Length: 259
Image (tube, rainbow, N blue to C red):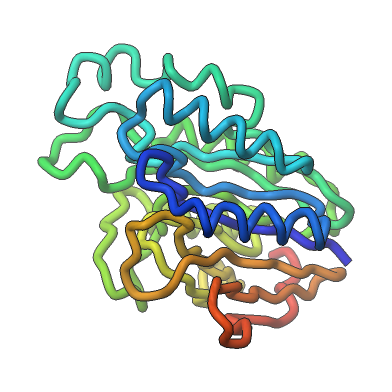
């Protein structure tokens, strides 16, 4: 059985030290095969925040992949750097950034949903470019035939069933093509609470899996992360929370065969 820990929105600069210590202890005690970080490692994309986040992730001692979140690029305070040099402070996490991962029976594929500049006021919203989608589809095509395919992005691709409108441009069309290519789930963050929503696309069921936060920027749930357990074509999502309450199974079932 493969075991993956999915975390998101750690927001170094507004991180919760107790939640970070709890997560690190879970990794140490339970030895997951990999950690999938779906964006917003930092709060304001400063070099110090990236350095702190890289030290913490590197100290976990397991393979890690990191997606870019909207907080990981300069915002309105530095529009020129956002446009021309948005990622130059990523050096500390470069080896983990948008890194495809393979563990027995599972392939993790990155999908970038953050744009340098969009023609709308709210730059925090997501966008799936043709270039980013093509790169993800190429990795899916190269994955072992019977692998479970998990796509890692920062923004949820659809608003369906969520309490907040994420309005990811190109998300619906991307989800259709990802499902047709054989993806089984899209993991995301951004909204700071966990969910597992099955949707029908391209004649298959593909699951949208969201994660909570380990920062102080809580919304609907306490600090937490997801544990994904996969065995063959069956996998389940368990919401782990830093409370005495039992962990919650968000979703489970057998992935559809490839279309």
